[in-house]
Amino acid sequence: MAHAVTREDILGIPADAAVLPLEMTGSPTEGGAARRLTEAGGAALATALRRLKFLPVGSAALLDVCPLPFEKLIVTAVPRWRTGKANELMILGRCYESVFALAAEQGLETLALPFLSACYYRFPAAEAVHVALHEAARWKGRAIFAADTEELFALSQKPWRKPQIVSYVGYYRDHAIFALDNGLYARVDLRPELRQADVIPFFEACFREGNNPLQPPLPPEEIARLRGIWEELDL
Image 1 (tube, one colour):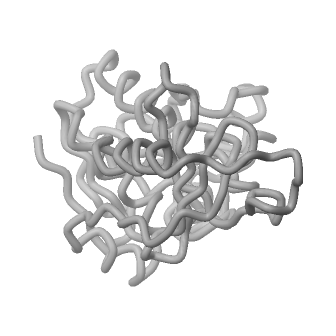
Image 2 (cartoon, rainbow, N blue to C red):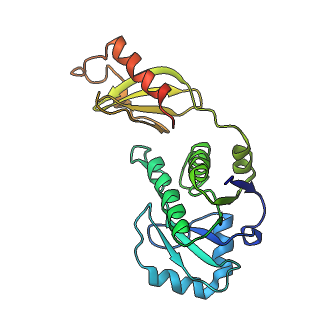
């Protein structure tokens, strides 16, 4: 089923369940939609969250909270953006996978949820929105996103454009770094048996070739191979 994005209050979205993003500590995250759910849930929600105790990042759990205008409430522990090299985008994808899998198990057909981690914790907004919509398109139910900001709503209305490589920067250990035309960087795994690539917001100076005299330069054909991996992968 198709997904939708709205600027409406998440509490007013007609859905079987809502999704509340949590910190690693178990407390609700920042953001307008999360705040509205937390306020509406009141003491009952706070008690349910205390009983939940630890929830691993990337996983989801079901809460039965009466004060909310939904049949169910799903919570998921979302990642923070740290260096961009800790698989943050992959973990964010797992959050959605866990949420949608749990919703399917419960027979839920519609979910109201914010864009998890987007615009908070230094997450690149466009990448966070892309992950959300990509995972929602794979779910058989209907996901209705409550955009916390005009920026998120605007990003959700634009067709996804995969960022293009501008130039090769260098490499460090198992990854080559390419500058992208959106100001971020592509990190592509050097190992021939792996075809993996992700996006990072910055790179350390040691990624630049020439800083380490023991680091041999990559041959042009290897750089071309790695560039091809980025261009071929469906991110």
